Image (cartoon, rainbow, N blue to C red):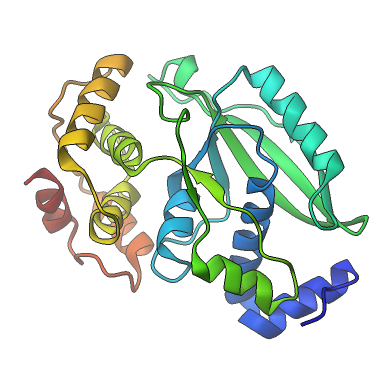
Length: 264
């Protein structure tokens, strides 16, 4: 297929390959995230985008943002990202816009993700905005990322006439599980979606449980917010949150069973 020569033709190609509406939005978000992934200075993609790139578009929760753990100073990291975006990749260029970080109650400032907007252009025309959240390297989670280029990503790019991208740096599964368990077990947590992500990671990845336990112990000790092993309470309003996020995914359909599954 011929490479799109304009922003409009790029979107037309995505629509023809993946459909309209939500299917279009999901596909475009994945493609945009991978493109930004080509230009990251260092570190590792984490969160829902990382799981999506490991396991596939249809096998994971719907997410459009891009979470990254950086391996260097934030100011330097953003400066290098800006330089990479200015240089571009296959006609895609961009700029970084700083956003105001959230101030969640009870969460130390060091753990709060720094939000940015990456404004991507294609052939000089505005295309899409990627919501980028950047965290720091806590216990080596950004030092040695898994470089991944799943076949489905290559096929997505081929289907719209774009060249195959390079591998995207993803946070190791052991660190991803540790962070999910920590977020899930924080006092007052409403992160029912982490139950879904944990089930998907365990089912879809080759998990080294001894290594993962060690990483969990280190992360919980480092953050000093709750003890290890964690207690997952699952508040009453988790049921609706869980059902809303799980959809047709291959996970247990009851939040209490999901909590039990994660604590066996």
